[in-house]
Image (cartoon, rainbow, N blue to C red; front, side, top):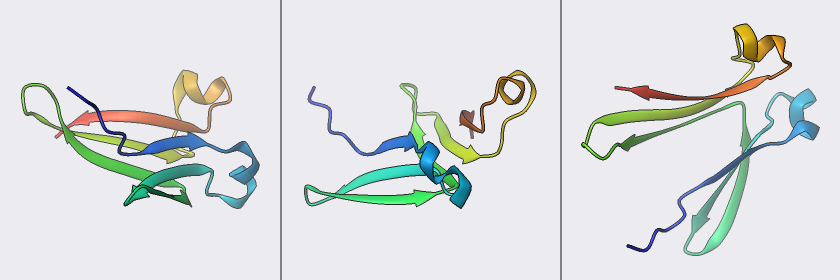
Length: 79
């Protein structure tokens, strides 16, 4: 099975002070489109066709992640 890339997502420390350090790259007919945001989410399905939500949010860390200096956390949730 050939896998096709849907999205690239990364954290850009240089944009932290602007409040939108999450960089999202998608493709429009093969042409890359990059946007910045403080929140991104996607609905997907696991191998058993259970709906899941994948999201990343700036300034959402708690506990050990926050105390280690992290400012964004990837979350995978069942719906």
